[in-house]
Image (tube, rainbow, N blue to C red):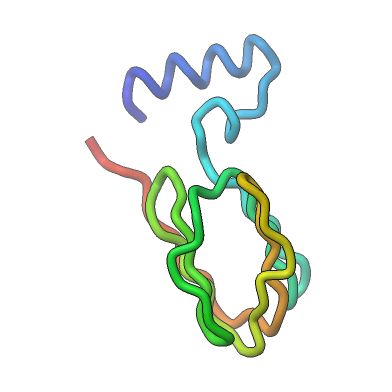
Length: 95
Protein backbone atom coordinates (compact mmCIF):
# COMPACT_ATOMS: atom_id res chain seq x y z
CA UNK A 1 0.00 0.00 0.00
CA UNK A 2 1.35 3.44 -0.88
CA UNK A 3 2.30 6.00 1.77
CA UNK A 4 -0.67 8.20 0.87
CA UNK A 5 -3.07 5.27 1.30
CA UNK A 6 -1.44 4.34 4.62
CA UNK A 7 -2.03 7.88 5.89
CA UNK A 8 -5.67 7.84 4.74
CA UNK A 9 -6.18 4.42 6.33
CA UNK A 10 -4.69 5.59 9.65
CA UNK A 11 -6.82 8.73 9.63
CA UNK A 12 -9.96 6.74 8.83
CA UNK A 13 -9.29 4.39 11.72
CA UNK A 14 -8.59 7.28 14.11
CA UNK A 15 -11.78 9.09 13.07
CA UNK A 16 -13.83 5.88 12.94
CA UNK A 17 -14.64 6.41 9.23
CA UNK A 18 -15.19 3.28 7.10
CA UNK A 19 -12.00 2.35 5.20
CA UNK A 20 -13.84 1.92 1.88
CA UNK A 21 -15.12 5.50 2.11
CA UNK A 22 -11.77 6.98 3.12
CA UNK A 23 -9.89 5.17 0.34
CA UNK A 24 -12.62 5.75 -2.29
CA UNK A 25 -13.00 2.00 -2.77
CA UNK A 26 -16.05 0.11 -3.97
CA UNK A 27 -18.02 -1.96 -1.47
CA UNK A 28 -19.80 -4.97 -2.97
CA UNK A 29 -22.32 -7.14 -1.11
CA UNK A 30 -23.66 -10.30 -2.75
CA UNK A 31 -26.82 -11.99 -1.50
CA UNK A 32 -27.08 -15.59 -2.65
CA UNK A 33 -26.50 -15.83 -6.38
CA UNK A 34 -29.19 -13.36 -7.37
CA UNK A 35 -28.49 -9.89 -5.88
CA UNK A 36 -25.40 -7.70 -5.99
CA UNK A 37 -25.24 -4.30 -4.30
CA UNK A 38 -22.30 -1.97 -4.97
CA UNK A 39 -21.53 1.30 -3.24
CA UNK A 40 -19.12 3.97 -4.50
CA UNK A 41 -19.20 3.04 -8.20
CA UNK A 42 -18.08 5.50 -10.87
CA UNK A 43 -20.60 4.71 -13.63
CA UNK A 44 -22.03 1.93 -15.79
CA UNK A 45 -19.85 0.93 -18.75
CA UNK A 46 -21.89 -1.91 -20.31
CA UNK A 47 -25.40 -3.20 -19.73
CA UNK A 48 -27.08 -6.27 -21.21
CA UNK A 49 -29.01 -9.30 -19.91
CA UNK A 50 -25.79 -11.32 -19.77
CA UNK A 51 -23.20 -8.71 -18.72
CA UNK A 52 -23.13 -5.55 -16.63
CA UNK A 53 -19.87 -3.72 -16.03
CA UNK A 54 -19.20 -0.63 -13.97
CA UNK A 55 -16.21 1.55 -13.21
CA UNK A 56 -14.63 1.82 -9.75
CA UNK A 57 -11.61 3.66 -8.38
CA UNK A 58 -9.56 0.47 -8.92
CA UNK A 59 -10.86 -0.29 -12.40
CA UNK A 60 -13.68 -2.10 -14.17
CA UNK A 61 -15.90 -4.65 -12.36
CA UNK A 62 -17.64 -7.11 -14.69
CA UNK A 63 -20.72 -9.11 -13.72
CA UNK A 64 -21.83 -11.99 -15.96
CA UNK A 65 -25.00 -14.01 -15.67
CA UNK A 66 -28.48 -14.61 -17.04
CA UNK A 67 -31.45 -12.28 -16.96
CA UNK A 68 -29.43 -9.48 -15.37
CA UNK A 69 -31.23 -6.23 -14.65
CA UNK A 70 -30.12 -2.99 -13.08
CA UNK A 71 -32.77 -2.93 -10.34
CA UNK A 72 -31.56 0.34 -8.75
CA UNK A 73 -29.07 3.04 -9.69
CA UNK A 74 -28.04 6.24 -7.94
CA UNK A 75 -24.93 8.37 -8.23
CA UNK A 76 -23.03 6.15 -5.80
CA UNK A 77 -25.02 2.91 -5.42
CA UNK A 78 -26.33 0.24 -7.75
CA UNK A 79 -28.20 -3.05 -7.44
CA UNK A 80 -28.00 -5.85 -9.97
CA UNK A 81 -30.51 -8.71 -9.91
CA UNK A 82 -30.62 -11.92 -11.92
CA UNK A 83 -28.72 -15.20 -12.03
CA UNK A 84 -25.18 -14.17 -11.11
CA UNK A 85 -22.57 -16.48 -12.64
CA UNK A 86 -19.24 -14.65 -12.34
CA UNK A 87 -17.70 -11.46 -11.01
CA UNK A 88 -14.39 -10.15 -12.32
CA UNK A 89 -12.75 -7.63 -10.02
CA UNK A 90 -9.77 -5.39 -10.81
CA UNK A 91 -6.64 -5.99 -8.79
CA UNK A 92 -5.20 -3.19 -6.66
CA UNK A 93 -2.57 -1.10 -8.39
CA UNK A 94 1.00 -2.05 -7.59
CA UNK A 95 3.60 0.67 -7.14
